[in-house]
Length: 224
Length: 224
DNA sequence: GTCTATAAACGGATAGAC
DNA sequence: GTCTATCCGTTTATAGAC
Image 1 (spheres, rainbow over the protein chains, first blue to last red):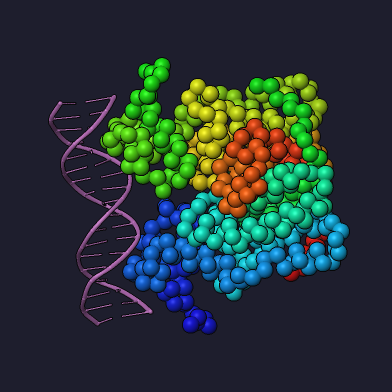
Image 2 (spheres, rainbow over the protein chains, first blue to last red):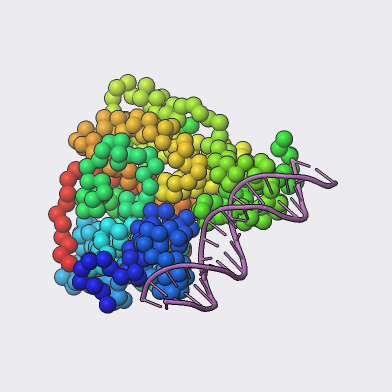
């Protein structure tokens, strides 16, 4: 079905355009006509191939996530096997979590950057295709990581561990898909902006240190 | 104009409903009819009072931000005066940044939680009222804080400081307005969820440690 | 599978009575 | 200031020719 080269077929072109436009504008602000216009196909093809606008959105996520219904925690399995019951270092866990959360890209169908934007958008803008299948598949992975983090950070309460994982995914989601309202990346012409690997390199020390931080509140020095 | 008690007037009810629905669904996915329906007023009142849907959105942000066009950095001014040229402690800067970015709430018109949701949404979903006045006013404040952070963290490059501030606002935006797709807060029945002050208490040590983290990349231990 | 034409509903906005 | 009724463009979705 997929062509070797030259222009892809209509269905693929629709998916490509939808992927880009949904990410740029969001689901509600993107009309079918914008998509078909960008793809160069008549409007009716969306409903023919995907049934509805919602079906198209779901198809975008399905293509991105791929058919790997399988183990998103296989790498964590391997780590724990190697560790043989001993706690795993925080930086290793952080890297592994980044990998399972973000590196399940199918390079053959979609770019890593676009996929990460998809993930990021799913975290803050619910829509068809996002809430649908995220929870079940990812929540178990999150729980596995929670257990691993708690083993390596025994001084933290479960609440603190979960909160810090929450902050972690928040940073990633924002860095990958958040609109930079303050224009920080452009006003300071930030190195590595727009380059996921570069962002990860900057992000890693920050997050690792955050996980290693002591529990409890610091003295609040703010008056008014 | 504002009533002492009982049900507020139509204009206020529209603002209240719009505030809630815009935050829940986003700008594009919320129709005027949904708002007027929730407010129990006829549709025409939106255009009468606010001119347009966009005008309503802007009014929501205006009411939230209040009339304080003035100094959002006044507290930082005071801190720097007290410090007399010496660097300010990281945790103090973090608290101060949180305050200027998030605690400019007018308690009389709007709750702190809703306001923080507004701020959060502005960071990842541009729309009328957000890009309009955020940049100019906040970017200078960001730059002031950047300078302060660089004085207290001289071992970091400017890029690293800006990146970490970026991560900082990302965490806050996500914690305040992000959809918890993984249901972390509910699966673990997280303490302090939904309570901004509680979130801040959890967030502070994480962020402070992140700022204090050493520069550079940690050894990457992830294979495949 | 692809396209044209059209249906049916919904969107924001307005006119004009009260 | 508040409400009813309506205009008009755009939206999703479909019917049917090719």
